[in-house]
Image (cartoon, rainbow, N blue to C red; front, top):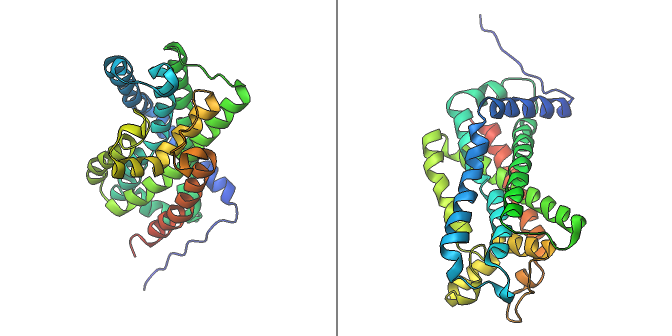
Length: 271
């Protein structure tokens, strides 16, 4: 005699999302070191670039280099979402948590969405802390609270997109150690951009990559909304002349591509 277990998907996806959000937040509560680690990388870059190399780098418009650097570091916090999302998805897969969740009567999309919302909440805390560090080292938002809040919102939107990219890559990796090693591949994405230096001095081919990099677009948006931007050069491409539209376009592409891919990979695992 065989017994068949049938799981019925709940008709209350918002309660699924809330419960799974709390699951991940509880994990962060019991591992507060993860939040400090998220701050460690941008703080190290602030010390290295802001105080060691900064005196040798000329910022556009003659502004302070640290004022030029800080918005870029805020963007890196958003982009670095790929790494913890990759590792978290691979860890749940390897330890069997994904299989347990798939056998429960909950929506497949709600499982990943709950993790994404929890990471977004933690990201907001980390970004707020980094902005506090920026204020402490002399950076200021010159154009008012409204435009600063808009920049903060775009940073969270970019982080949300990167979380889904991380989910997809983590599910592909399937193992926590592989995901942790593969996460280092995100590093060049932030370096080949205008986060640390203006793109004008780069070789032509590398400059084109950097100027169309979504990281550069987001950094240009933040500098504009925070009032740190001296204006795009006449030779700048469309992505830096219209950074808001370019960043929102990149975010739309990332969501349209990686949300379905992540949900599909999650649902098909184990079949």
